[in-house]
Image (cartoon, rainbow, N blue to C red):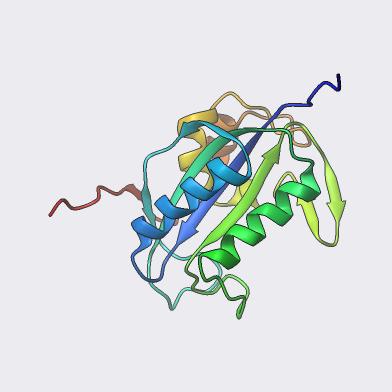
Length: 169
């Protein structure tokens, strides 16, 4: 019997078009089906755009997922989920229905044209660090050798990140 290599992967989800909360909830359901067991989930955060500023605010959240997928399989599944939910890639850092970023996949370090792990700019972005710190404050970045909490405390980003509560009808 082959032993499954279970790894914890940390994903950041974001949406700034359409019904953002509903799109993110749909993505979470698909991640649970296609990627693995969700063990932790941050609250929603409303965040100001990063990179391209003339666009609506984002809703972001972080997930911890136990998966047996390889990093390449994980990337393919994340991109497939984005496509299923209507993602169209037009402008780098531009508005989008859904974005699923792989922040960490275990302690893997990968630098390839299609995938860089850990995520290249995560330590410079509050919209990544705030939700990630909520669920993985003690996780140590395998290149920078600092915890997520330490990276957040040292982050120069001044973009606003605030808890978002879904209005009830």
